[in-house]
Image (cartoon, rainbow, N blue to C red):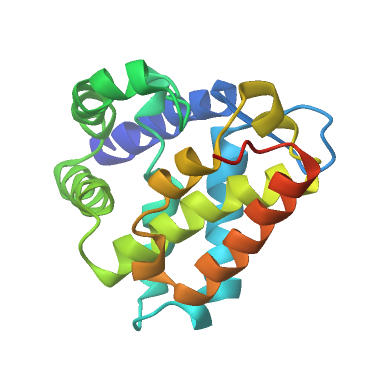
Length: 195
């Protein structure tokens, strides 16, 4: 029962991720998405888009990786993709959060989740690279679907999008090419600043 109790406490604790709102609007532009919605979307994308990964990947690793990658934001908060000041302290905040949140689990699951999270952060394995493709592509797709609303509100520049996605082609060249077409579209529409 002690193991089950720890697992149930973790499940209740991570329900808080539903209250972490991101800067990206839902496709219909009605409201901003939360981290739980984002992670679910990535898991579905992993299943649908696996064929576009540059390398063979295991969905048994990618799906849990994308489902847990933002749980640290329960404590650390969401750092907007183009927030340079927030990025300066992001790693410290997120590592502290990972210790506490994954620490709620039984040792074997704590270790597994922490290793998956560390692998995602390191961006070295085929699974981590593909997970990052999804993590970067999904908000871009939603920005396109919502008429570039978040980009326009934040005055996002093409150079910022390209800097954030400088390694995206390592996970999927095809998806990165698709993403660049969307960025170009929103430059023409005036939602992304071209420099």
